[in-house]
Length: 265
Image 1: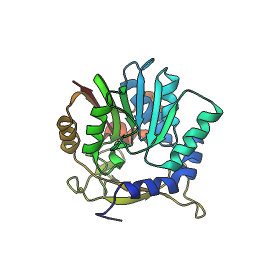
Image 2 (image 1 turned 180 degrees about the horizontal axis):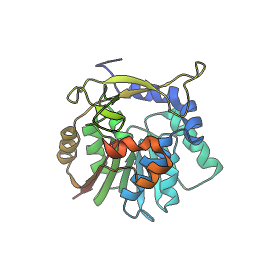
Image 3 (image 1 turned 135 degrees about the vertical axis):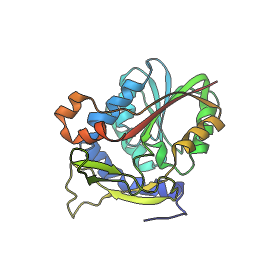
Image 4 (image 1 turned 90 degrees about the horizontal axis):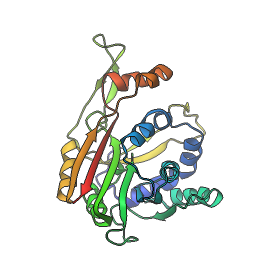
């Protein structure tokens, strides 16, 4: 469903609706890409964060935030969805890691003073906010001089609205078809974790999407005063592919995620 009027209120409402099922299924291990590829790849991309003040942008129900805290960081997690934050706080209350959670936008971080954090992290969230440029300006503001941003997003080149896997005679079994890379119109996507067969009594997740090009991301970082220091397009390892053959297409044919690191001068 395409909708030119999607804004942060729509994003918050969607993730509030998703909150119960999302927390249940993520914690049950249904997010197999996260468990077996995207989170391990992101952790390998990060610098040492032990002992540093870290903010997690778009933390959701806090699974990845807790991993960052277990690395020894002093972590604050923020998310636009009050429902997601409530579920993150409930875990923190039961098994404290010293994490602070706040319900706020990563495009308007008024909770925090200038120069508050050493590191900003974000895993698979920044592509789902309507104003990436504002998010980068706010990230620059709350980072201390010399502080860094590390984030992951769905790769904008290979995960367009109508991209899909198609049968192919030229490559083993499948090829990636990409359509509409320059289409920046927001839309709402409905989907479910592949580990669940989408039974009729369980609704799919609804996720507002805000497509951008690679240059949109890069130019917003530069305009905010953040200097890009690294970009990666991680592939699943051969060991991961042997253990989980469904990952092979993302090793051979296209990048699922894009990692970017940048520093505040």
